[in-house]
Image (tube, rainbow, N blue to C red; front, side, top):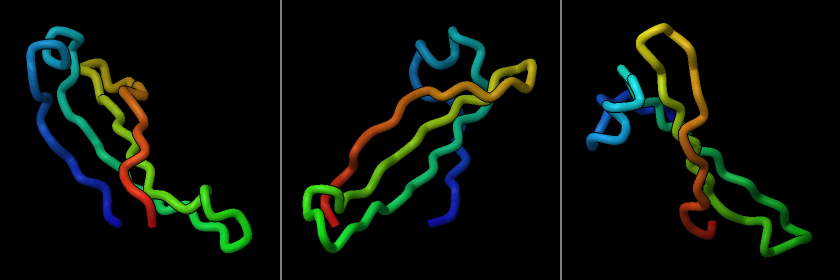
Length: 63
């Protein structure tokens, strides 16, 4: 999946100085270990000083 660029949502992201938010999705898959089949969502915040900071990572759903 392509990255998704978004504006900061909520007061917390704005208060921490984020100008943009990037959301990346990745599918983990392993045929031999069923519980390792899932999607992960990584959210990265881009601050006003152009530093990139990991905002959060979540397991989204099973494959």
